Length: 273
Image (cartoon, rainbow, N blue to C red; front, side, top):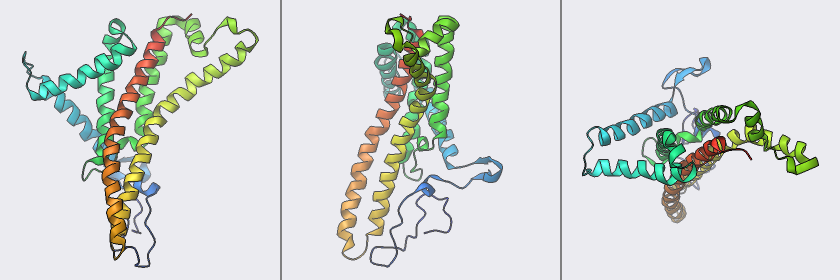
């Protein structure tokens, strides 16, 4: 192993099967990066994941800026792709979940979240970057926090304090004696568990997917020795299969994240019965 445990894929590249060295399995060290600028001890630094998040934001803004800066009645290829993506989120997610009338004002937010999350996921299979930003829990947590604040504020704005309390606790007087227990469970589920699961669902999928990609990638190199070359070939095929699968999962997780976002917004706007 490399003496520096803060580098992704930090392993001895001269180490192969039958060389007497152990398999350099990926671990938490594969998700830690040295600061590109600043000092980690002072908590004031800039590292690879921050750079990828910044570049991803610039790419997304640049793409839509280029597509819609001079829109045409007969769209070009770039505008056509941008319109297709925008319309997919607007009609397929926002309108279907919240409704056209209520949902229109939230389209820019949901579109932004979808493409940001998708871009952060896509870094995993892009050469040189080779890391999904959302595999670091702080990024999904901040995004889920934004949705959480919006959801809670909309609930209070729409229903007032008493109505919001009923919304959060699932108040239903027909439940009779079990109502206090039901309200307690719903309260903690909505206000504590919901934002946690919203963030962890995205994080866990990207973390697990990246770990599997690392595992097969390192194994392909490690077994590239003697008779192990045959095993290395199988492992490399798995790298290709997992990369294709990750492409699918990355899009699905971005979709699920914004679908849940719209579901929360719809719940905040719905009349309590």
